[in-house]
Amino acid sequence: MTGGDAFSFSAHAAADTELTMTTQACERAYKAQPGQTGRIRNRLQIAAGARVNWLPQETILFDGCALERRLSVDMDKDASLLMVEPMVFGRHAMGETLTDVHLSDRIEIRRADQMLYLDAVRLNGNAQAHLAQAFIAGGAGAMASVVYIADDAEARLDGIRTALPETAGASLIKKDVLVLRILAQDSFVLRLSLLPILRRLNGSDLPRCWMT
Image 1: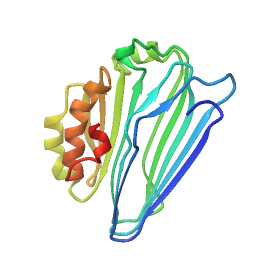
Image 2: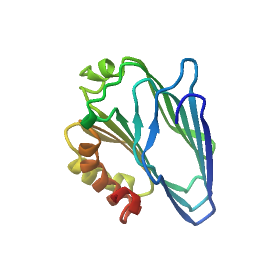
Image 3: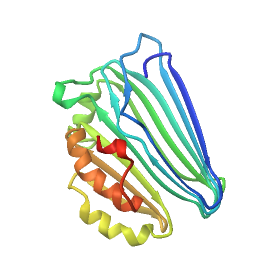
């Protein structure tokens, strides 16, 4: 994606079905021309008794990018969801730094028409300096947000916490809603902790493209 690009996607999991979605490769937000913003709109609908596994690979931000992204999830009362959104702040191995970034990333999850989870990330300007602050990201070069909504969320909390690195945390915001945030030096280190957790919550191996 670059400035001026627009992409929208929607999916519906019918009652008592299971749907797993991923991306064939990492999503990339490239340098944009002045005044132009790339826009992504993803929408998921999950019917009663259905489960969706939303497992995209990393979004890589490049210096000069301008990206506005929205993920909206509408769930029936007894639907289930495993969602991950990994993000990489420049390619660490290439020595890239992000000094001019415009990012607006918003996740909304509603259940039975009531807001259940809302997360918004905004970065404008020198992202490297912003992320270097100890109370924000402590210099992390990659991040992942995970939301797991299922009847067994509470039972999984202790095991998930044991598997997390020191730069991560997990909390229950409701008895059946488990939320994780992981920070890491780069995408390689992020995957070392993220993939085992996703396999555990997914109950099976991840899509093959995650392994290449």
